[in-house]
Length: 70
Image: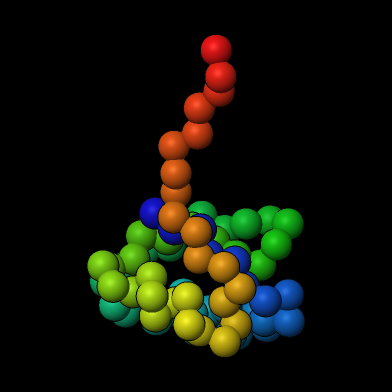
């Protein structure tokens, strides 16, 4: 489930448009970020590349496992 970060200049309407594009393509929004403009979403296969090329999207980062050293 990727974390999607948008430009700080993105308006609420523009963010809604990106979210609507995800849901209309079969994806779903999972949670919104509070400190930056962004959210996590489940997106259809192949849509990550489309989102990465969007003018308002600064970063699309896939979840990764994190571990500590022992």
